Image 1: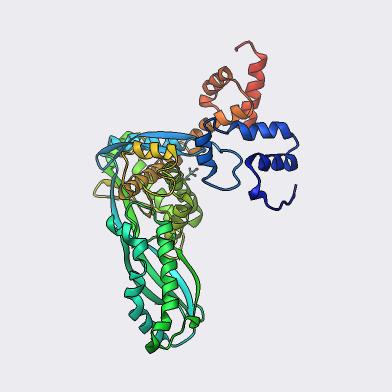
Image 2: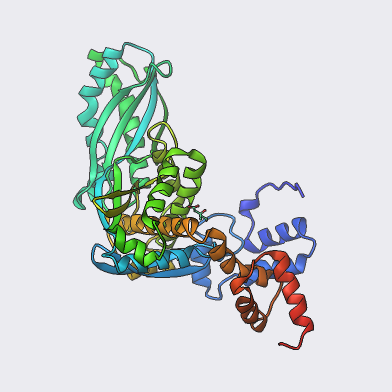
Length: 440
Ligand code: MEV
């Protein structure tokens, strides 16, 4: 362990594999076989995957699953989801089916603006930098023309650009805040390219404006980068029905009321809010990965949004008014359906096709509905049977696999544990007994 190497990235894939295997694994041949057994026979497909990243040794499988029967704005969807956690897909499918019988999910886009900032310092007079900014602003936009022309043709581009004085937070600190419409692209590269051009022009062109007495050296560009905090890129999803109807379908007394209380607890208590939101992200991450979106950006933006009132809160809301139950979510989702790996990864292409090739706004709405469904499914279990019943039933298969149970043993074990507590020890004991019996 703890070996160092120079020039690893320059080695061939075979050489990298050999170095890792020789230096880190006891079972060198067996480890090599494991790494290689995930390689694709189709060399072109394998190269495509290798080139998504750097220093690639192998492929890492995750299940690509489907949650069917999502009725969203009166259209039925089968949702592609990539996730390793058992019971997430089952919960999403169950919620989708239930709500499709009650009118389905209603969703809408509230706003769709992204943003990024040039962070810089300037130690001179505030009035001078403000006047210079106002003077140079049209030029800053003009200078991005070659980057924005295609985006403009598609109906997007730079929406606005403003100077923000942050000198009260840090000596000489200002931002140029730029807002963007990136249409159907997530737009990270587009935004960053625009910001870098703006920062360059802003600094360099100060020499042209003698009037403002600012020289390029007076402006220090710290960095230019998009923000994954997108509180103006918001989508809402909701479900509603009569309280009586829901209580009856769920076959549980005061179900709706208890549900509303559970959602309220996530608004009040941060410990619960984090787990509540984690359940929502089970759905959102899974569809985001399947559709080739950057789930880390989405996670970061959503969790920051959950803290927008100065305290981390649950992302969903539930209420009962005039005997109607309403459950909703309003979240920031900067998603793309073009660019990135969306038209490169064969499974991502299939996932998008399965969703009827949505544009970014449609994908935002579908994704918000999936998050809400996932949250509904988790809360439903939590306030009725408890989470472990469903969870451990699904987890049983993982335990059986880790104990190398064969298909017949798995079938018998699933039947046996229908009404019993699933844990490692119980499953292990069951298998020992089964293998010593003549039941197989
Ligand atoms: C588990 O992955 C997610 C839950 O913990 C979410 C929740 O508690 O709401 C079940």
